[in-house]
Length: 502
Image (cartoon, rainbow, N blue to C red; front, side):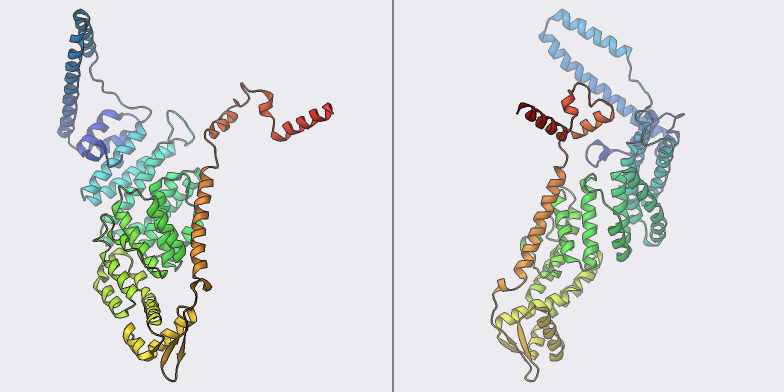
């Protein structure tokens, strides 16, 4: 079902032909079979089947030629007899056309998901969205008929990943619809998604719970409901250990975005950095660009200037060019250049969803400019400060400098009567809190890595087999009585033996 391989090149006619010949018309998948057959006409389905038979015959002819070459090298009589037997078997056993029994539900749901993806990629968004509703109805009917604990024929354990995929496709197709029709549909789906998430958590279904949680977070962020997203983030638990890597990366990105909007820049920086590290390097360029854009803005809000190499990554130089200009303006500390750059790329920043965060950078620009002025001048007038920072008047400059002094950005004194700022002597950086903050970030990262490693090594390999044997009553077979004793019982026996010896 991935985009690579033969499934990525499938057509609607091939899906319809496959459903016609693999699903039982009188079985449990009759509804899905009729829907899938409606994707193509009877003539198109027959042409697909003829092409399939021709390909099979060509493959057999090639196999026969290879067999002829190998048989000619052996004894002539034995080769003829073997070829005659192969021909008799091929004539007696034509290509069978049978319907699936055990995996019919899974194949039906997979074909529906594949049809939705083809229609969505063909820009047929309305039809793809309607198909997601039909597919979810079919899957819900199958899940209501069977129990998730049933194994073998009738089991539905393989349907839950397909359910998560259909929910993801519905979210994608819904975002592709016009805004007027999309807003009402998104609001109507939220109670359903909340119910599905609760059911998935109770069922310990990591696939559905992770996908649904990410969908709800994305919908709330798209609707600018940051507080609701924060409540959901704090009350819901993401299955970090069992969820797929793609869903984990999405969760980290949404978490970092929510925390950045809530001024929690340190946590946002940590989550976005993890998302970029865990993201596949050979795929998902769009996601990596979005995460890198947000990470650059968060770094600027934290008072750090990103490395120049970040803006020139593979495939990112064009997309990150506005952010490079903004970072240069912040580094220079010129408020006028910063406002001009932001106004030039305002439309692009709004599309990226970072305009609100970048509008907070004006204070960081002022702080960077004050640091440069403090380094360059031991005494400077407030009027010159206003001119160099692009402030409207000396009075505004006085208020800005006073706030910077109170916040500890610069170490200086303001002479209000004479209207200048007197910088103090350069203080050792190790006497400030900056080194401790840097060490705190590094230690927090090391502790997080350490905890992740311990969590990964908590269970030894094949430990589940012992639990499985114990649950089935096989734990005591083929073992001595000593294996069933606890460590305390063994230690007590050893002490008793030592007491008897002495």
